[in-house]
Picture (cartoon, rainbow, N blue to C red):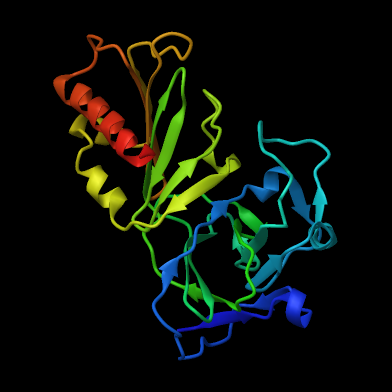
Length: 286
């Protein structure tokens, strides 16, 4: 298994490395989860020079951030804050290197630590079956904020299922979560009607199998809409609000809006599913 040790530049002068070194065998005790926040860096900054090979980057000052990135003059993501509190956080970035088409990605799934070190788990994926790709150079990346540390940081490549579910309620209060088979993400400050979730910060809870488990509750009539968007009733955020469901399977994305009021077009199964989403969100908010 290939992993990377990053010598933190605050100690040794380095802040970018390749993903190609082995993790030492000394584990120094039991690993525990490290909290982290997904950060939509592309909303606020542009990388000055792309990493053409698999690499990782750790930044702990605004000066270092400015060395690698240029702040965008206009913010394409409503509500996204460009400020990072480097007193308490590091920015960690991982890069797949150059790909020749669209459809590739890289994602941090969990972070753990023991008495000696921190390990950042991540996976990569290629184009999904049936996905239309566009030729050209692309540079997949992912960024998170982690608590400031003096421990060495390693990167561990894993294999994960890219499919996921997004559930949410909107109206007077917006609550949105993504269910993966490797973690649960809570999206922060989601704007009603603006459901491009890659532009929002998120916090992660490490729990496995949530996507597969919740998929069992999805009615057949919604599964059969594969790749389509459908609205049940007239969910008005300014009035009664509604429930949101988004299913990513391979190259297909299905989006569903369900009125909080039971309407004639909602079957018994859809009404039960609406309740299942609300109940799941209540559990996730605890």
